Length: 320
Image 1 (tube, one colour):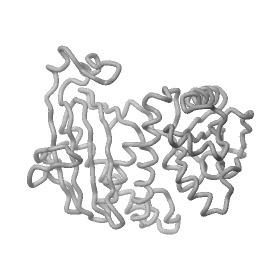
Image 2 (cartoon, rainbow, N blue to C red):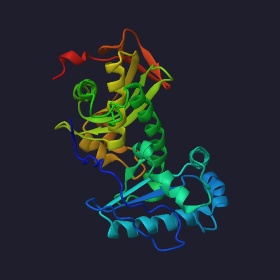
Image 3 (cartoon, rainbow, N blue to C red):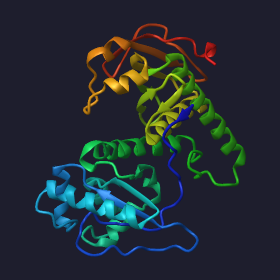
Image 4 (cartoon, rainbow, N blue to C red):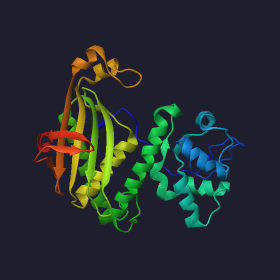
């Protein structure tokens, strides 16, 4: 599976742009031998903004001005740092983090520690100049939810996804890598069988401690090249990995519009809507697969997942 979007590097963050405020010049922390990086926490709703103001997070009079200030800060960071990343600043998560570590939430150092906390690195997104108030803020919200699911999957796999198992258990690491590759292959075969089009995958695996869920929007061209957000691809593969590795039951639905992706892009409006002749290039589709643990196969009967009705999918074993 090829992506037009390059995969985000998983290097550690050594410099933190730690407050979504414009109170004082940013003071980078340099780690010898590592590239400079900038990390910013972003409040993603007016309610979160109101709650965080009590900690002196920013000076903006309202949420609209806060977003404008934050956009300026990110634009400036793109010019000054090699890597710019952001994550959702979640007030409740932050408050619980401070309580756990005995920190004062009003202290800037507490926000610094929260943003670069290693277990939460899965919530970071690379920032490349996107419009903050457009798609990027919703992606930050999804990245937090995805990050919690990734941590759950990693826990189920004894730290095998992100190296928590330790270097000594190489056999376990190989087992997890093999399961991850199998999961990626399952997803690839789903997309190859679907052909060109605009789709959304919804995935659910029943796991100890609660269900693992993933969703990803996919645009696939006629030549098989796929456009998908990196963080969504990571989550789908991790959930499939946990399901296959631990032989957990699950269900997946791939639905959307099958047809010429290029025509879809030309017919799409700025809001993602399609109209005119482009509609004639598409066929609504919805396929379902299920897993009893060791493998994925067409669902035995029609499935409804998250409100989406789907018919049994095609055999993944016949897709190259």
